[in-house]
Image (spheres, rainbow, N blue to C red):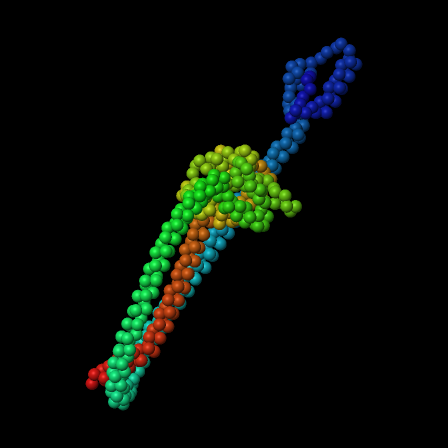
Length: 431
């Protein structure tokens, strides 16, 4: 009978049986008999031998039990992961609803305040018109009485003023003649000076044109050696080094502008590192993205960032797919204003990539899609917040304008009685 095996391992019981049979065969000498179990075929399996002997294959039972336990453990782990994502989505929805409700209440409060100001303004206008009418009537009566008393005094003063006016007119004509003579002399002197200045100015213009040509030549030479955007990149590096927990390399000579990474507690950069490329142009193109992918592959980093100065430099396609993969490289399209916020969002993903390998997101396509949608949703939320802030500022400006207008109405109401008094004086003089 042949030795039997299970799961690639030889059982001790079979070895003991074979040893006993060989010893029995030696004792019996040359007398051979057929095996009662396999009937001389020598092809029985271990499970058949155990079944005929009334025993079970405990190793197979243990293996099946272990496989069932692992299956249940994986199922539980998947259910826990789904529960965590559901909790995250519910919390995100809750926070979004809270922010929307908060801004809606603020807008309602501003609308209520605006309505109250309108009502107060209407009441003040009505009260002011009534007060103005009463004031006009009393002022008119007092002005008529006062003007009658002043008319007689003004008649004498008018005669004195007419005589003084004639004398002052004669003096003015004499002074005008004197000033005219002096100005003509000064004008002649200034004309002489102007001619001299014109000659000097022509000389200066010739010298300035020569200096301008030399300056243009110098600027042309300098533009050949100065790299476009150098100052912008240096300013970004200084700003990024001030962010907590972020490590920035020195300016790269090739394959990107900078290398970004998070620092560990000792201050050393951790994996994965990120290639960053600054772009200050009207709009980025696919050529820029292809170059960034090549730079990331040369640097051996799975993540790359294309950084623009302003949101308008990103195409609509870039805004819709701010986090996407291209040729195995994950690209983040962002601006200098968004970059700190985007790095905070990606920090947990980068940690998982460091622990589970650069292909973590490729194995979890649903998570990568959720991250991409998160960027789009956060951008939309920021736009709505800007609209709400703009609406609040507009409401504040309207309230200020109403207040200024109300103050102007109050001031004009105080000036109108005096104006009515001055309008009545000429009519009394005509009488």
